Image (cartoon, rainbow, N blue to C red):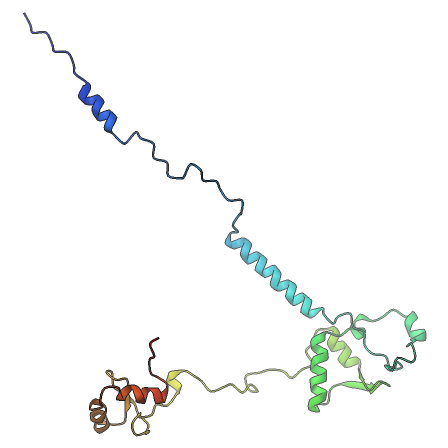
Length: 218
């Protein structure tokens, strides 16, 4: 008679399933978390807004004096008489001759102060010079009446690059091409190098302070 199989005891498997943490829910966010209402902009939107802002600023600076008419030859600035243009007011106004940008006005005033002869017409009663047709045409086409800036008329400041500066010995003041790696002092020759190596503690720092190359820890 075959032996009867023993009943399966699954208590051990039930214990393993109970202690297994794989099936336990592990939320990665806080249950009370809510997305913020603020929407961040991507790079494309930021660059587009910056380009529009810069274009608006340039257009504002360019058109800031575009509506300023040229002074008329018969106008007075003392306030006693209201200027009347007569027959000229009935004719259509030429935009190229009647408008000036603010930058052109500044350049003309600077040129007059410097004594530069600009292409201007006769002066009116108020003492202001009326630009001639050549000047008005240049203004209408957007030409710059100021001095042209080229590579030959710009006086640049001396270079601050270390390769373009001469180095001098911290002890003797003579031109030097050597630097002590330990004390960071510049020396002229091997004799001065021996003097640098025999300086007492704090001596190199005083020489560096005289040159403005000392390190101050705060």
